[in-house]
Amino acid sequence: MLDKLITEFDRGLRTLFAPAVSSRPRPDHAVAEAELTAEEKQHTIGLMRVNHCGEVCAQALYQGQALTARNPAARDALRHAAFEEVEHLAWTEQRIRELGGRPSLLGPVWYTGSLAIGVTAGLLGDKWNLGFLEETEKQVGAHLDSHLQQLPDQDAKSRAIVAQMRDDELKHADMAHDFGAAPLPLPVKGLMKLTAKVMTATSYRV
Ligand SMILES: [Fe+2]
Ligand SMILES: [Fe+2]
Image 1 (cartoon, protein in one colour):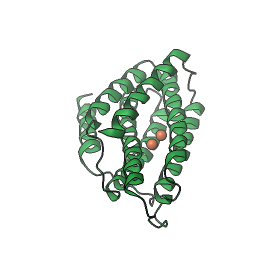
Image 2: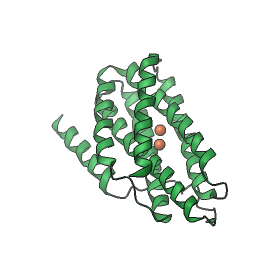
Image 3: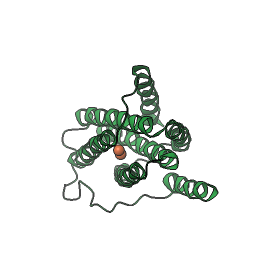
Image 4: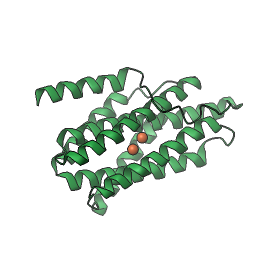
């Protein structure tokens, strides 16, 4: 257990303070940079900062869940999804920097909270753990769809990144479903939406 904790602690520090790497090519690698006004750029940085923060949370959630998941097949699936989340982390961070912004300063706060939620979900047992995961991924997918409506039309680079992330998240939701996710009670879903709202509102700005 101590070994596991040290590994997870190390992963946490890397998520927060080291640049993430992607093995897939970035979804926008063949897309040209568009002309953006200063206002559009600021808005895009804000949106991408929210998405980056979401990916920091995803790291913590998956870690917490992988620490506690009992079914080895589910644990492997969680690891694979977590690997794609690291790529999302890399893409969003790089895009923020290209636009001249920096990631949210609140990363460590959201990371710690998400890790606690992930461990709690994991302790409740695999079907709830996976249920929580499926619902999270669905909500994130819907949220990314709303960003596709809000991003400047001509910013095909940011749009390509967000579209690929949306597709990946929906795949993660299906995976959790196939492994036997339990449907969450309505109030829990509501609470998750509320938490996400606070996170998105703050990380857009700070
Ligand atoms: Fe993601
Ligand atoms: Fe995901």
